[in-house]
Length: 171
Image (cartoon, rainbow, N blue to C red; front, side):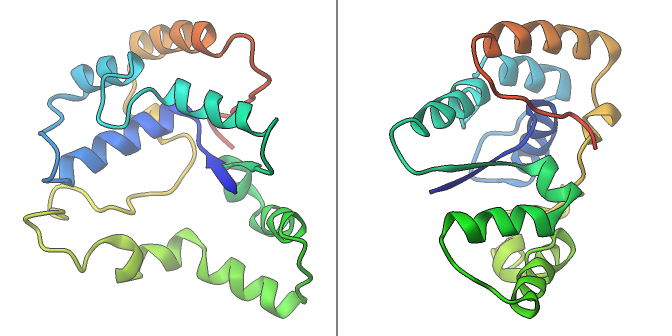
């Protein structure tokens, strides 16, 4: 199994925008309220903290490659090589470069099989937000107030204490 984790602050923003466009779920409400629910795990996908910690722990019992989204954005070639090694495969540079090209955010954003544009707007309303929005690390800074960030950091520290997980909130 391969698990790709993203920092909690950017996940909160990403989930919010997904819930704005996802007509299969209730309207997320204002950002301020949504962030409060996200911090307590009271969102459709449950607690981000519990999710990443549980997969981190599963590595002890199962062959799981745990990767970070921010690392993938920073150096896709390095991270794809980790996947290749984990899968015990050998790929030449031409194939490796094709994988990197076709799995880049920019390519996937334009791929209807990935970006949900093939679904009717009654399910995914792209006029509210696109499914593949920005794909950057650190966009949370455009959404969090100083007070929200401080509160989030307190909850994060409490929730993530006792783990070795180290997330970067920007590149």
